[in-house]
Length: 92
Image (cartoon, rainbow, N blue to C red; front, side, top):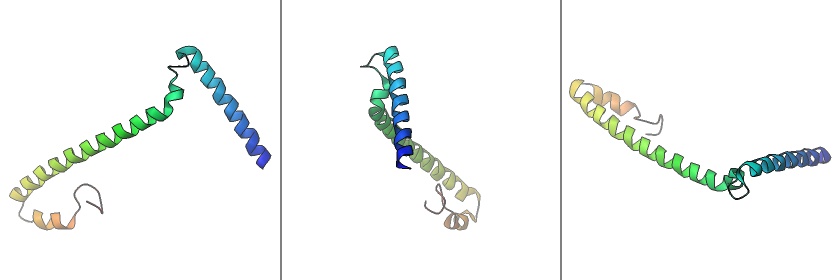
């Protein structure tokens, strides 16, 4: 089993180096995007997190406005609002 794992690892590493060499030929070694995966992943994570926060704030403000309007239009909306979560089921 260990020998098989080592063999698969060696084949994967050889394939990765081949792909990286091909991308090096296209972009050059300094601009190879495969060499910058850590930085690209870090940037993508923070962009995703920031956009999630912005969307949460947007939908929270939108739902507050709608709740205010619904409380004015419907008499029993306050009871419904007390039973049901707003944006995230079972949490918020």
